Amino acid sequence: MSKPTLAVALIVKNEAKHLQACLETVKDWVDEIVILDSGSSDATEQIARQYTDKFYTNLEWPGFGKQRQLAQQYVASDYVLWLDADERITPELQASITQAVAKNQPNTLYRICRLSWVFGRYIRHCGWYPDRVIRLYPTHLTQYNDALVHEKVEVSSNMQLVDLTGDAIHYTYNDLHHYLVKSAGYANAWAEQRQAQGKRSSIGSGFAHALACFGKMYLLKAGFLDGRQGLLLSLLSAHSTFVKYADLWIKTSAEPPKD
Image 1 (cartoon, rainbow, N blue to C red):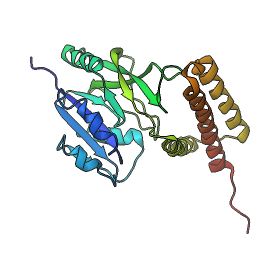
Image 2 (cartoon, one colour; image 1 turned 90 degrees about the vertical axis):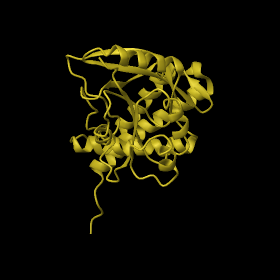
Image 3 (spheres, one colour; image 1 turned 90 degrees about the horizontal axis):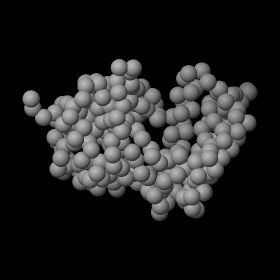
Image 4 (spheres, rainbow, N blue to C red; image 1 turned 45 degrees about the vertical axis):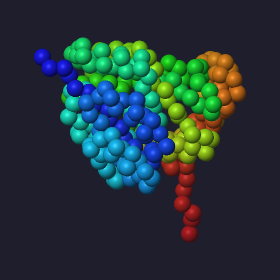
């Protein structure tokens, strides 16, 4: 039997800052690199084409889940490994991935562990580590769901999950401005998704969820052990939580001015 082939797939937009460093960690041991861009205005395409000819563009943004589904249609390999441009594969994780592909167990999906570098520190608490996410699976076995944001790989009852060893280093935010912009985008997509589901919210609900978020991250998940970065991240996450519930309230409750 021939050895199963492996593709790395990414969906990107304006990732010139991170893309080269990401692809350098996979270029020598994968069979295929597939990149789907959603309209970059920086050097993302030029960088990507140094590593692959399989660079595609979809300007009609359908949400994260459907964009990943579209990207997967371009994958020809037996397995697909999903990465974000701000992630790096460590040698230990590389060895675990290649071993899993070679073993080729049926109906098996694999989770990787992400270790995030945030505001000058690796975050090992706050509920952020180990941050296990399904990223490796046989290409024809499953795909991501349709979620606009916080998309997940679809898992059925006959599939088994296996945790890989080693970390993917996740350079989550460039700076505070990047965090706020990224968070606002997620909040808007979350609110739109909930609105489409007929959900509603209130300012009080947003405040309660924000308090619960801070308490969980900083106290229950020992964010205080991550120093000042843990405190800042817990406060920012509480703020982001409030914003998404407030945005849903605005979208579903605000009325136009009366003539």
